[in-house]
Image (tube, rainbow, N blue to C red; front, side, top):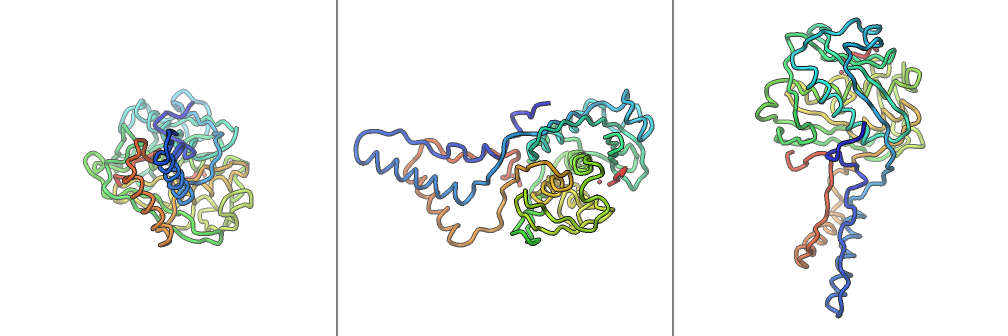
Length: 325
């Protein structure tokens, strides 16, 4: 399965920030030099190093699948919404993880509806690489037809913490749902979480299985970060991350996406993945802020025809072993 064009890789961010046409005359040359200087300032402040290879994840219908039946039993034939929509949102969640993890591995994950009771939203099994989503009547769902557009939420909340390897993005939550998003739990968030379990536990139970802490490996960014775990190493013991015991935003019908901590946890647990981090930083230092604002002001003053390109897999402007969640 290939990532859709709307899932834009982080390495596309600020690609070709500004390109100026060289023209004759000293005024034109000064303009070219000014634009190049501004580009360097913006890139230095905001660009994150990334790699381009991607894992592949295929989410398939569980109803005819032997592995799903062996792990969970036969899936329910019908759910709170159609299997077509279930597979669509499941593959969207798979695409999102593909855009954040680097490697040559391929995964095939059957997905189906099951009634796990009122306390469980979803379950993932590494025994057969299968995921079940709750068919319990006590759960209502929001199935976003455009899951990479987060305009149904009024506020973006980012969290940061230094866990020993530098200041790290630990939460990526959209809150204050509007419209259809107020009608139920975000299926996209739950499936992102469950696919995260499949990926992190895929290597013989995962490097962090049964542990209370995970130390981010030297091969990864933010190496040395010490992550507190729970549930036999399946969940992060923090409130904000996607791979926490509960999606931080779910209780309020919000949306939680993989933070840099989630991405690193999955890659560290699996043991061989590389990462494409979100590249978030906390509130910039004053000098960085001044440089960036000065650069932005000069861009406007110069009247550049090609503005800074911000290609993100989400709209920042609008701003759960079987493992159960």
